[in-house]
Amino acid sequence: MTLLLALAIAPSAAAQDPDRWLLTGASSIPVNYWQGLASDPAKQNVYFTGVREGLWRTTPQLLQTAGIPNAIPPEVLANEGYNHIGDPTWDRREGGRVLLPMECYDFTLGNTCGTGAFGETASGADAYINGGSPTEGFLGGSVGPFSGIYHGIAGASAVDLLFMAGLLGIGAALLLGIAMKPACIAGATMVMLMWTAALPPENNLFMDDHVIYALVLIGLAAVGAEKTLGLGERWARTGLVQRYGWLA
Image (cartoon, rainbow, N blue to C red; front, top):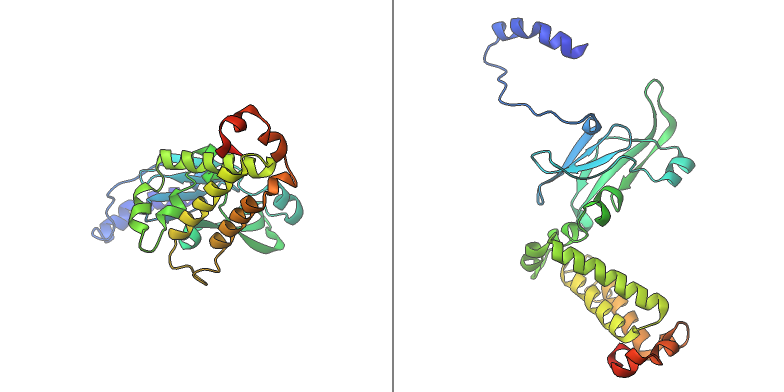
């Protein structure tokens, strides 16, 4: 009705004040984008929410690069009743994230639960399996003496693949207790590289979680943790390890 009324009065409005409004272009967007939007200027990503709980990412030309129709986790919906995402906000801290206001919304009654909450993007639309980049936000927001290097490789497909493959390999080795020494060395190297991407740290230069994780990994390898709990002893007797001792 509002649109029809605006079209109806447009000629008279233009006649009264012909220099105020000038249409320079228009873009059509899906109804799923109608709730609200936010943008990451550094990486030129645009984020839309709608119709109720969807989260979508596009380029500035509105080419969709990722999306999920149900961004609110089922357990949050069941326990809190939040079923609607409002206007999102881009927060450049912690490597960049989208803040999502949530409420229990009814089109006729409004916010029925009387409370609200904020969620943040950590999976879903930005997940690697949905086309998201696990390195784009963190490396793209890098600060410090090595930021130029990290900005240059942020979001690269090869870097994303190496990062995810590294997490998978290191995590599997630590859980099973196999190839602990190379896994711990690789894990410590990875977390220290992440430490160099955000220098100086917000708190203490050395009492930082990345440094602590690296020391823990080195300690696990040094004490032979795989022999206490894991498949380390069986792994050490395999022909592969007998031939390539560095895999122990």
